Length: 190
Picture 1: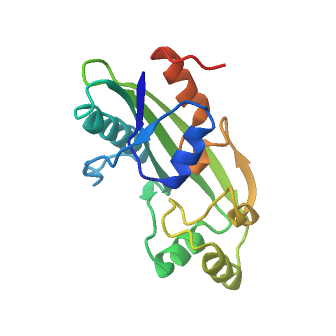
Picture 2: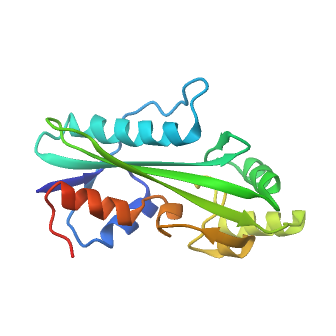
Picture 3: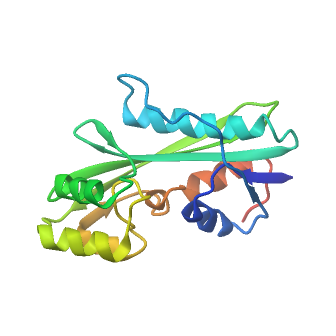
């Protein structure tokens, strides 16, 4: 069965490759603007489903995986910073705090139901000095990462603890749930 990852994220591609299934990638055409008053967890589920469905509508013979992630601090979503100043501001706001990272995955076909799952990982940041934050952002350039860090890299040094059911969720694609959904869709995995 043809499998498409509705993402051009190198992080998600590397994660999905761990399942040893052949797959293609496609850029989903989806409006990622949060809806007014939309809770962050609902937003990531909606966007994962929207991304998967958008690509599935074009690829009639494939299962399509969509995923989305956001950080939640004080009830508000924190997306990708995009630039150095916003990355530093995000990390300053998270210093010494616990932040919820919501990740959703959805699998869709053009003619069938959308299968979806979600994961929440709690990241406990240690107290971060301004110089530490600047050095980290300059060293790793996490400008395309929700929450302004890469837990699979140097970003792990920013934490006091992580509470997670699936450590891959924090990187952007919860593989435990992805594997479950793929088995449900008929893929043969261990």
